[in-house]
Image (cartoon, rainbow, N blue to C red; front, side, top):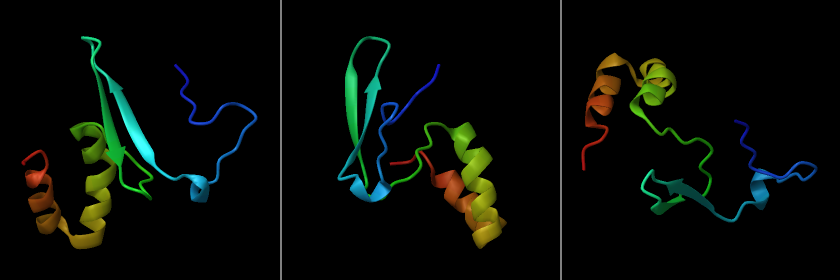
Length: 77
């Protein structure tokens, strides 16, 4: 499956984006609309993606202990 943000032949500059909304369609047919912060440039939808991309970055940035504390806090209200 190929997903495109912009139709073929059209370009969008990041600076032209006024807002971002993630549309989720559930298996029961329901839909959710999740507004994203202006300037967001990545979305991680599950723990495996966080573990693969985010955690290694923060281990290098702030160290293992701080990153472990942050990771343990994911998913908590």
